[in-house]
Length: 300
Image 1 (cartoon, rainbow, N blue to C red):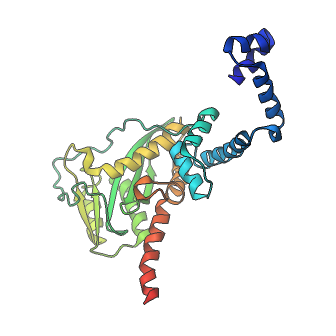
Image 2 (cartoon, one colour):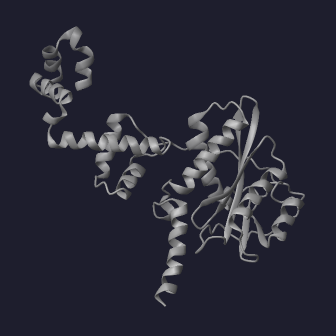
Image 3 (cartoon, one colour):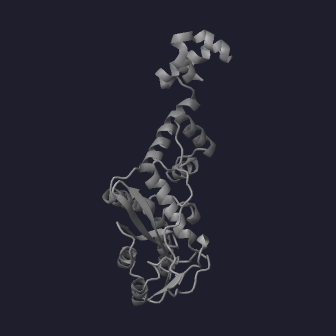
């Protein structure tokens, strides 16, 4: 309402506009004075100014994808006591909002002629510790130079991305590179890890299956035509598409997608709050898990 008067006062005058809007001209003039000198504002208005700066900082620091709930939780982690409804009100006034997910499309093509391992997960995407269950999938991104493909390997325990790769082709070597990164970084023990994917021909290929066996990893594959059988991987890919690809496009080339993916994966693993694991980043959840293991040992 104040902004409306600002925009039209030169044409109609303050008093006539206030009369139509049924507010006192003194109310408008008081707001103008407060805007010019914040020290004269009410305590609530002064608090709103401080919170507005903090909300904008959190929103910008997290790729502009956080809605009011995530911003509110991040402020709470920083020790800022504020009601969620206040964050919602101020973000609405600032025109800030979170990313909204769209409908995802399937990218992998099932190879019905290739024998597949059994489904050893049965949609139970929860584990009690890291390196027990990994899920894998990939997606595509349109660029000015054609499609590129992005593969992910995710540790289910804290939903941490442990391997990823960007490629101009969707051949088996491409998803195998993402697996190799995960194996190099995590070095899982042989015999204690399941790798789950859909029935895409890249994941059920002889080359990929042999690498899993060599690493002592038990392969698991979901059923045909059932998106829920690899739902966690698709959820992470959905976040990637929503928070990076759709918000920052159009994309010039593969190098631009690769750099953005690198930046996003680092943020996702170390700073993004994930509600299913207690509104903390995946890396923090893993640190807490290993710290709990050490506590009894120290006590003994």
